[in-house]
Each structure stands twice: as C-alpha cells, then as structure tokens.
Length: 248
Image (cartoon, rainbow, N blue to C red; front, side, top):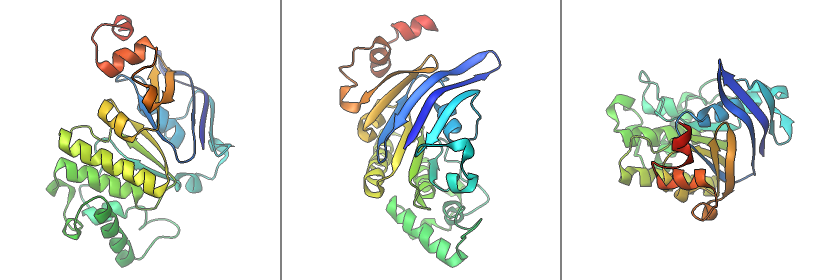
C-alpha cells in the first residue's frame, strides 16, 4: 500500500534520511524503531507530505503522492500524535470530530457529537468525557481521546507516533491493546513509531529499524530477538556498549 524508494532528506549539514527503502502492505502493522533523532518522525511526515524529501519517490497504492489530489489523499489517513495534540480551547467531542465538522461532506453538529461519543466508547471513555476539556483529562485519557480522533473518520491508514510515551506501564498496556484491536477490527494499515519494545511486541506484524539514515533491518516481529544484526541486538536489549554507542 505504501512504498518509499530511496528517500533522502537533509536539514543543513545533517543528513537525516539517506536512502530509505520501505514497503508497507495493505492491512499490515509496521513498527519503526530506532534511536532518538534517527528520522522516524521525519519518515512519516514525508509520507504525509508535511516534509518534502530532497529526492526519492513515495507511492500510495502505486501512485506518486505528489501527483495525488491533496484532500483525497489526506482523507485516507488518521494520526495519533506523541503529545496528544488536542486543542485546549475545544471540548473533547469537538477535538474528536474536528475533521467531521469541516470541509466537504461535513456533518451536522449533533451527528458529529454522537459519532464522537461512539468513538470515545470504542477507546473506553464514557459519554461524560465528551464535554470535558483536555486539561481536565489524565495523560492516559488524553491519549485515548487522541486515538478516538485518529479513528473518527474511519481512515484506511493510521500513524501512531510514540503512542505510549509518558504513560505508566499499565496504561501503556491499555493503549497497546487498543491499537492492536483497532488495527485488527478496522483492517487498517498502520505505521507505529516507538522506542518501547513492549509496544513493538504487542502491536507489530513487522519491524523496521532505522539507523544511519537507512533501514538497517526489516522483518517479522517474531524474528527480532534472533536476528543476526549487532545494531538491532544492541537496541532491543538496551545495551550501552555496541556499534551504536561507538558511532555517537
């Protein structure tokens, strides 16, 4: 469904992406891992067109994304942002229904609110949450509200950017389970960015490690622990010594 061919992106002298090649199949849950600053978020921003690659090609269903109708292209995506990214001045239901209330095909407010409450229920939040403001929610509730917004328009593709960042282990487990269930039930194609190996094991069908601006290793999640790659081995076991530390 998504294919990146030789994607390169630099910011000044810093080469962040240096020839990324990656394929994501329809209905697959791919998790991208790698150290901080290795270009994981830039990769998904390039796919969304928020960052323009210096060179290379990105295809969606075989079509160059630069030639696609922008509104129709973005309508296929949902996004769970790392920090939640909820609008503080809006109640939760308006955050969830933000896309549904704007643009072509927008819904009446009553219908959009009812749909938002339905999506809140899907992520384990009651209807009383709908009229609260983000500041009145705990971190875990904000993350779940962000997840409800990501699925509000029933997208074909969802990106999850560090979905368990800042959460305690129990709530992280709840979010991982929700992501796994939603991917399975909706049949979406998913790309998740994370440092958390528990998230990797809980939600991934396949794993790609980004290091040195390239995909260092890619394979099924079941093969991660036994893969013969020193960079991957060091990362997943959190060892201070190894090739990654040597390069820093």
